[in-house]
Image (cartoon, rainbow, N blue to C red; front, top):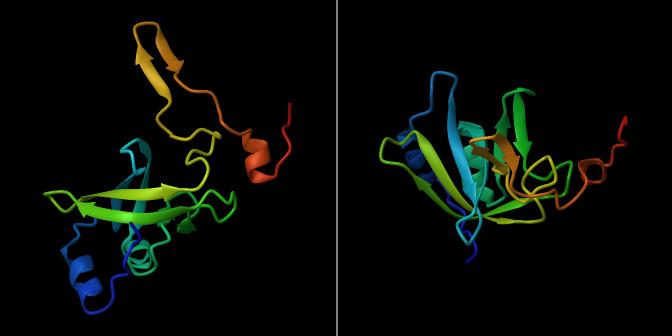
Length: 140
């Protein structure tokens, strides 16, 4: 199922219905076609507009203070298949086609740390070494 880009004036009307927080952001949960939750990130109006109009998922990096096109440095892109807004209009659920891994640790999903009676337990190993993923060398 390919994403059909949303164009004006519908795009502006949809963006106006979103309840961005006081920082101008909305949380966005990305899941794959099978419903596995891959990650949570943030979008501002510009990132959401770009995502809805192009189908290439774009987030807002709070740490860098700029748009972050998923996969721009790693090649692990996300392409939008569907988007839903929750009942309060303050959270997005994105169904994406994930190229490679979603997590910067090299795992398919960012949700790999199980909370157990003995503490945190990794439920999955990395699919790819993060140093290889980002073309960096390890300091150890």
